[in-house]
Length: 112
Length: 117
Image 1 (cartoon, rainbow over the protein chains, first blue to last red):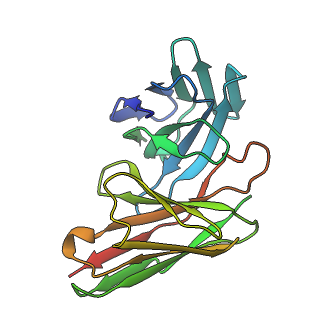
Image 2 (cartoon, rainbow over the protein chains, first blue to last red; image 1 turned 90 degrees about the vertical axis):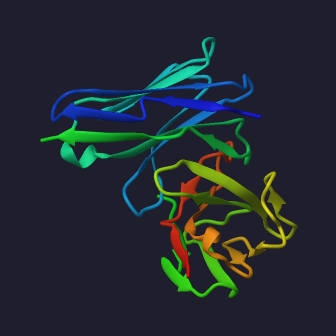
């Protein structure tokens, strides 16, 4: 089955700096890669996703890149703000109602 | 956007009792819903895939007789933890897909915190 590795497990940045979280996946059939933000005591919230036919996607301060050859994808958050502090999960799926496999999560702390 | 709700948000029960958790898609129909379990400071672990009108598909190691799943309609799936024990205490989260496009974008509910005394 699919295996998703994520790092770092914790990340502290100064407010205004950028944060980068990296993930790798094992199943070459995976073609859908969502990123979720989870705040304490809440369910994960989809923040951005990318499909295998796209190399990069951006939404305001958040961007995701995908390298299918190397089987890795990354989340980039620019101009970080304290409210960005949360746990971020990357995930991979083969799509079409198939299950999503999650990474272990990255706890991001933005220091004011 | 797509909204998924869960009820209750928190439940405390005595050991040996059964607890039912509801997952609803509020503004879309969901043929498929997923149930996850999350321990503190850990990732989400898929328990089972809930299919409307048919039996759920359980992940390896998940006891289907202990975690009963019913997906009676296109907007409601329920997870019943039978004869709950303290080790079942966890954060249970469901997800559902609106089914547009490739049908793989999943939206999560707010989760249910189960504490078994």
